[in-house]
Length: 369
Image (cartoon, rainbow, N blue to C red; front, side, top):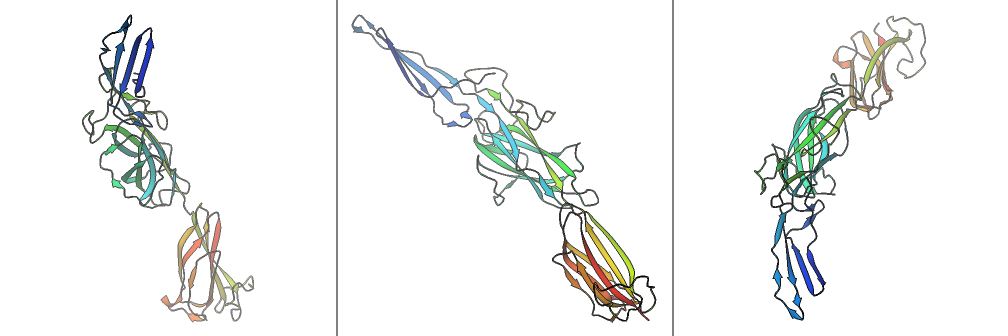
């Protein structure tokens, strides 16, 4: 079906051999980027003047003809891009932009869903919010967004809607660094809440005839993100996909113990100091615990807390850390004889860089005589 062609309003006068024709096109609505607004009535009239010899004859007023401007159903969806997220995060946003590129106010229904294949995990969609704006304005994260509850009621031509999908990410036991969840947003064109061309909130249906006196529905939308049952060319729908990407620390830990010096009478309290190899773990010996934390992921691990409670057979001597940042180390006083909870060594607030960085907590103690 072809969209009816509209000429700009104006007047035309043409004369030949004493006969003059003039015509006028009358229209009462403004033009948008998508074209003249739908349901506009365009009326065209003309007059004919002529003479017989030198005697002017009565002007003939031609009959007026009218037609209706058809409604173009067209929409697009884009997005601000994929979202990097950590495991267990809530309220994670992917932001889409839905634009009415047709020539009449429309409503829309929205469905956000996980793709069923091609990714590694699913996101729990916890809500959709939206706010409208003029095309060309950027996303404002501080804008007041309404909760989506079944339809977006009235979006004018040249108007866009920022659609914010909120999701909850599975915990670390279910996902790994670089895993991806792909989510789609499908918009279907509805009659607007104030529609004069159909029942408010009803799905718009393509016209099956081409009547010059009726505002026909002409579907002009594209296929969105590829072919599929969710969307097709000229179906009044648009489909766009985006992804959540897991960026997670990949933490591994080890703890080893060794005899730093068999004779622990001196040097046990100095880290690093000089170890004496081949010693035995006899009473009075200085032993060393080394806890190593490796972050093999793609994002820093922060707020790290490590707690090590020394046994009652030991005397605390020293503790230190390496390769952590923002770390706070809490430890007993040197030469504290451990009796239970008084020999807790603890680091808090530590950050360990991504890419294989290894942080260490070193603890020295003597075996009680």
